[in-house]
Length: 436
Image (cartoon, rainbow, N blue to C red; front, top):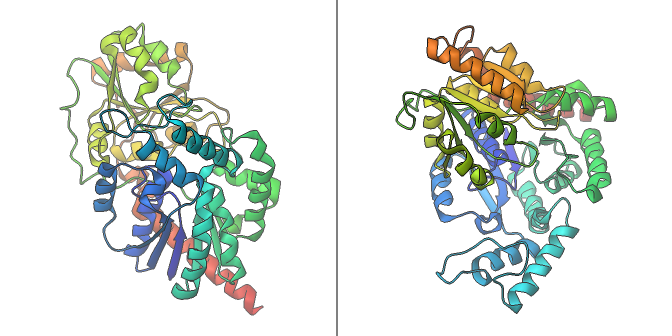
């Protein structure tokens, strides 16, 4: 098949959705499909030179990537960050919430950028559609794809899928997380629900990462099961990354958390539980590690912060830890993609559940990959005392199945095959409808 993917978030972006479509696009190419990706330019995504180089090497050359720049708000914010907002040492700084450090020109540009962000659905990234729309039309005319996939987030990318449907091409929407999420500003909820309904009514196939979200789309919008697929986040093969204990000590139960620290993913109960425990250390490896910096002095040796490192090094850290900590989202329609990456590490997982029902809890229990506990200080403290006793007796893994075979369905090659089959069925289904 000739597959066209529209994804604002794509390497060099480091977002979970960028990783998802980096992996899936190359799995589809490895299966013999011709894959083209339409994505945002590097300056639009505001990534640093180091991450650009790292992820460029990761993508290889088997996928054609076409990039377009955003206009207005996104470009202005880039200009503020890289030109107006330079500090005295010459390094670029992130635009602050207020006007501190900006001259009058910088303040004008910042205000304009914030106004653009406030008026854009769902955020300032929507401005990319102004250039991505014409580019998509050109690619449809020149590449003649058999199917077009639009990747959420941002939700504005999904609106581009209408161009594919108008051209008679099957449109596949990868929703991933819900369009109507807790972190979406309330002023956009009505529009987000209209978009969610449009996707369910007009798409040939809708992909989600959680069965609970698939059930809600069926209940609220009548999305048929034949047009919906639960396509999990995945993990790369572990064989190419050797486990190492060099990052950890020998006399402490080593907990490791890697990934984002969103507002809907609270680490505070875990930190509170650690305050009264001995012989346990938590290492946090996150781009938002500054969120836990205020706790370093209070927790002392119980807490260690590590700045972001390349993805292959993150996997080395994961494979050397005693326990990997997964913090559940407060929204029951989501499953953190980090959970599946943890599954691929071959290490036990302690999942902190923050909602009910919690699909992550079910996955950890069904596949016997670790333990689950409510994301509250007292239950966490009790569970860590229990796990510490098991660890000291050398029986931490008792009753668990940490083999790669048991979770093989979540590897990127298997998920790529699942997506390839679903795309073929979607194209065949639309062909039959046209012929009928």
